[in-house]
Image (cartoon, rainbow, N blue to C red):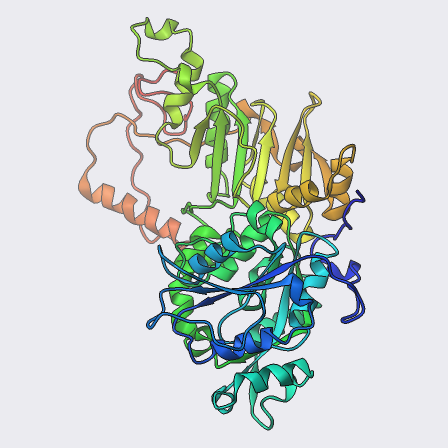
Length: 530
């Protein structure tokens, strides 16, 4: 079987789809129509789908009734193969669409909202991309229009007019509205061809489609989301290797303004905490410092080595300029036991020390095997514990990848080992493209780009030389409160970048011999060197 065409980054312009009406489809398509109390518009949605140019024997429509009241029934005018299923558990569009995907018979899943009216070639325009590659995620073009004039028309008339190619004339003389924020970004990025990894943020599910294979290889819809599910699905599909296509010939009318257009500020306010937590590419919604999120921006994977070096490396990673990370430390953690043993002679002492150091650190996972898949945007795999990144190194390398849209940075050690910082979506794309015997590194370079650096040239140092600042609390008599207040205010001025207005207090008496010096972060509680 021939390998699929390679799309670099999100430049789908390298694909050449067939002309509408001039090709022979073979893939079956299931149009999934979630509905909740859309009794007025659904008959027109199904009427237009009954007039599609796509072969009827390859087209299935699945209406998913999300507990409408009264319950939704199928109208008389509908495609030949139309089924109705009812949601029995959960609620919301994401839940309904996922149930539709589970019940669908088609090779392709085409999400289509119950207030959309398709032009004759809408399904065909989507399906042609899926015949080229199994990782395309096409989105269509739509215009918002007041449906009032349509609702008195017999759905059979609408079906016949759409079949005659007259869908564009259904609303003569009426004002209509573009999906402007989407259109603006399309214009800036040549219809997402230059958007790179940001393309996923413009996945609009009301007219989206995907192969069933890609959908189930991804995390799919998050069924707990009530809004913003399209952007989350875009992230899931990108992580599975998807490329986001704009097809302006996949045309639809949107019957009425969407909730996002009508209540944009409130919808965004509701979505922000959910999308910030779940979608790492929504970084403008994430704090730069001090926060961790359910789905991290970066996952670091390393195998535990000698305890001191391992602990220091993990501490160095947590101490850096990328707090939005997870560290997965691979080791035999099941060997840590509670049996009676001389503590310092414990045969599993090295493992025990690492285990206890990070058992309650929420950003560290202690795992028995290296994860084969990550939900993070990037994965850094470290070969050993000999080097550690300086505080700014990881952020700088990630910015390097973001600017170039590349897929990987390979960091070489003097020992010949390498660390790999890789874009998860790029690895997934290569996984879809590679066949037996294919050079995956060459495919990664072709589809996204790879660049190598000596690790020590980009901020990595021997682990023992990486300074991780620790608290210092010298043993000394209590300080005079006024003097302590002066120090307090001086520290606040320094933190705020203000010139200090408080004169320096007199120096403290020298600490006694048993007290650690303030600047000596290598001393322990009793002044012993670590």
